[in-house]
Image (cartoon, rainbow, N blue to C red):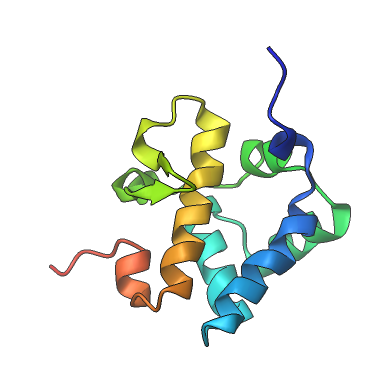
Length: 119
């Protein structure tokens, strides 16, 4: 079975689209970076290095310093697909990121996006 095209797509080619989507709705690049960092564990310098190296999505997630265990709390539909039902691990991570960017663009509070508990 062939891999989905997104796996070999460079993260750097999609990143500006994430930023544009957020900024169009009044959010910032810093907030996009915060969401990516929360999900993957990449610090700002590491993220910039990944963008500079034009790392593909598969490698971007495979080499992520610390995938957030709370990401499993991300539920909902992205592009008609329920994220929690995606079986393939890398595709699920990509869908998690898509969902977080959607929530950011929809104006959801950062604490809710980053799944911080209220206790």
